[in-house]
Image (cartoon, rainbow, N blue to C red; front, side, top):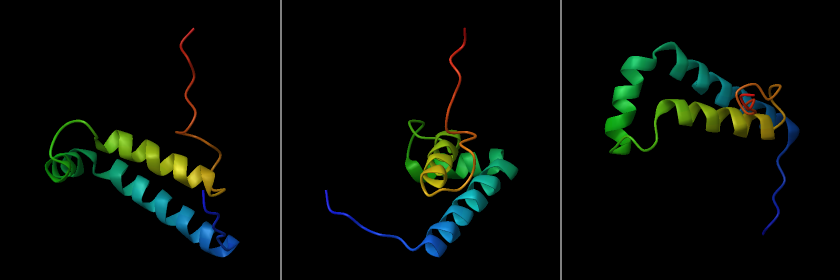
Amino acid sequence: MPSMTLDIVDAAELAELLEFLGDWLESDGDRLAESFRRFVGGPGYDTAKLREDLSRFRFLLGGGDGEGVFKRNPE
């Protein structure tokens, strides 16, 4: 796999953008969910899954504390 470096400032800005997008998706969930469903073309990938992906990518860039990335197994 090819390696790639990312400047720490760029990584922080990208993490902030991912957080912004996740917050936006959460703030207007119903309207955005319908629009996203039409854009994706079906129910296989929804805004909740998109928000999980955004949280994971943000965490991998060093942003956040992993909230929304790691889930507890019910006991």
